[in-house]
Image (cartoon, rainbow, N blue to C red):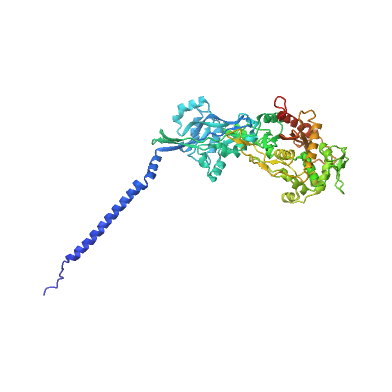
Length: 617
């Protein structure tokens, strides 16, 4: 019997159903894939059209930032103090230069480059972004521009650029007030990035470094513009597509007076010191000189290391703004303020008299504190003590008052804190107290410390600006302003900051102002202002730089110059309605009345008699 065989039967209905399911699945897959393709096409052609168009254009469109012109700076009378001058510079784009040292060595055969300049360029590359231009040489002559243009094909990535650079026509006259602009360094770059202002400097290589240039940087700088260029695949410009003009910086007008500033520099005559003049009616600074000075134009185009080190290591310290950073013992210039304190606190009266035999002693202590007049002044009251600058009277007043009372009374006059002037370079000075000495030296306060403070010596220090500001408050009988340089922006007619007045300093007995100021008026017209055609008030001071032992006579001829006394003076005029207040500090010249007094007289003459010898009204 043959083996059994499996019989296969065809199920056409099942096969048709299977085929149908497979056909539907295949159709669904085809439709899905076509749908995805259509969606992607829609995404590319419709939704992302602008994005891809922009990307495509970016491959052929170059956006070039345009630097704004920096705002100009004028004095109160519209005299230009800081301007912009055209210049040519040689710029390098590091990412397009294969071998920078080799290129620089080849370049010096066309453009004179010293070994120091080449080294400075190489050093500047550290931390510099390779896609940002780097200056190789500034202030090219027309001949140098022409010579390089002929050979430019040999130096890919190097080009001559034209622009505007800051220029100070009066060179060193206003340096410490105006400051200067200089190249943006790594520290500036970090600061700008932190403050989200880096884009504002995309086309600018310079930024305000000191003084007014730095303080009003946001006002002076302006806003950059942009230029859209169509370029080929080699980066060469084909045509200009769009141009957005930059917004120039705003011009500013200052309270400074050119003629008064020139007179101050002339009077200092290169001597170390400072002169500050303030209009007490609004706090505007009329003149501010720190001597010696330097030419800020050296920093605009990049000062050499050799020149900078010479300034930095100079024993005269020209880089320091003595007017706002120099800290000096105010000496006898603070005696009127101390007298005012004594009268106000009832420690003394106008009739209080003190015997001056030429020395004063703390009760129960043998040490003698000497008067400047070795044989003494005899009997003195508060008026004669100010006029004659009697040390004994103020030793006694300080002893009775105590240092903490002195500190509390002097603080509203601005001692021991910054004045708020509109430049950043300012020191606080020192207004000493018991707590201050404990915090600074971890030492107790001694009565002898107070005696020194009573004549503006010891730990007490102040800047010439602080001294002038305090004198302005005294001249104003308590009316106070923030000292400032800015008069107006873009116009010379409207005050930019008319609300800089502070809360006035009020006395319990306003008649005390007159007692003190009358003594200062007599001190002025008894000495330097005898024949002045206007009224003035003055107080001189002589500050010791080092301590002289008891019973040792000071002799300027036998000591080094840097140890000799500083000369100081405060003065204002006219006495009845003050329009100008001065502080003068001359370093290591000796007696205040003899050396600083004539400077004060000449400065007030310049201001009060400038209109054909007629007193300013």
